[in-house]
Length: 235
Image 1: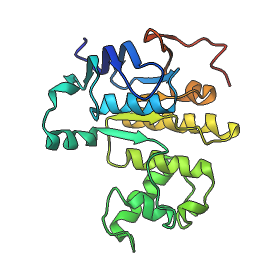
Image 2: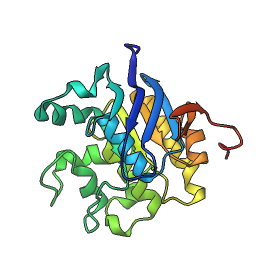
Image 3: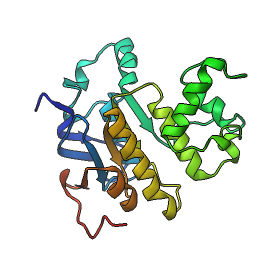
Image 4: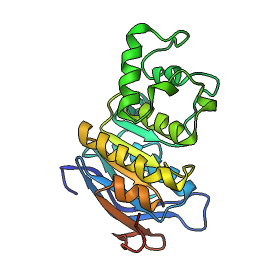
């Protein structure tokens, strides 16, 4: 495996509650690379992200992240500390529905968010600008804003603490067709600005074509990755 790659998988097999295990024959993502990966359902996407973060280990094969095997991290404290390197966009992440967007975006920076500390407001506004969240939404409750805005809040929280690797788990599943490409453009722009590496598990053609440099399709039976057909990715 190459030393310069941020994410590497080889011969990976991971069983979970599905008809067949998740298989990845070989995957390598270079620093600042942006890969969209199709062919994985929602439960499989969660398994995939857990393998990359080291939350679970493969039954077979090896996963290396930042040049180190995830199996080599045996200490719980070390693993928890390593999570700062990851930014994760997932609908499984909880927003405080009754809190404002300002309060939700302040959570990575401050334990007390009622009120949000004055020194945190500027950081929140900067995050909002970077992720395409209009400042007029910041005073609204998370439960009241459009789905497209909520998706951008998930993205903003994922990048708040300056991770090196952005992991996305079907990030646009709840979006209308008209919002998907625009979200992909935002993701590509911030990844370039922050020199972020990205792995997005997605079936969204419009999002992937805008956000990723490389689009791959996973063959579930073999784990082989192939370049996604142009007829699949469009828009």
